[in-house]
Amino acid sequence: MNKLVVLVVEDDTPIRNLITTTLQAHDYNYLTAPNGKAAILEATSHNPDVIFLDLGLPDIDGVEIIKKIRSWSNIPIIVISARSEDADKIEALDAGADDYLTKPFSVEELLARLRVTQRRLAAMQNELTSQSVFVNGNLRVDYAAGCAYLGNTELHLTPIEYKLLCILSKNVGKVLTHTFITEKIWGSSWDNDIASLRVFMATLRKKLESKPDSPQYIQTHIGVGYRMIKME
Ligand code: CA
View (tube, rainbow, N blue to C red):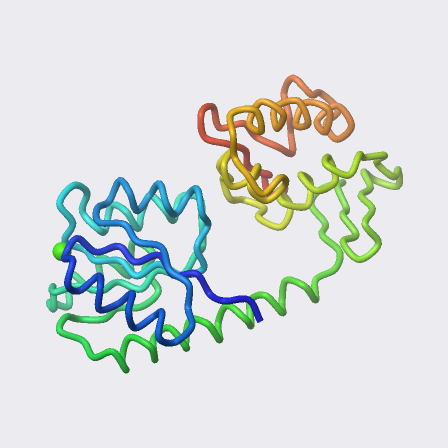
């Protein structure tokens, strides 16, 4: 099983070190961010599996960070905060946090929350891989066979166009950033990759969309990325 990557967002250095030392001792990988801006950058560019998020950060309020991340990702977010009022917990959960840990917390408590999240992620993964055919409007992607169809016509896609279609369809309804997509395709995210992504997106749209200039399936979010629209 792959090691889980946890993004630790915490401005308090001793607490951040306590968390990362604990993660390391239990064989998890981690990334760190000391403020909200760094947190959003890390989350978009490295696509961690879980986020531990302190609510009281120097630049952006944690609840705002949850809302931002939720606009494009379902990644599990566990809030770790000194705020113990129920109203604060509810606000964070309403914004899309998955779980809540109040400071001071024990290392055992932290690990227990992480295990719960890990089990949920594994269950989600199983569900995803068991759905081997994706259907959206006239589009059908048969992941097991590696083919895509529009109505009854098979789409003749290049390997990269097919990969791009799979990434978008597996995240249907979500905005995926350029960085996220290029890392999935090429394992990197240079300016050149983003320029190439535009080219492959144009060729994919020519095959997929009846009017490539006013696309029905794949929406462009200028300066951000792309989203596959969920058809009614
Ligand atoms: Ca703090």
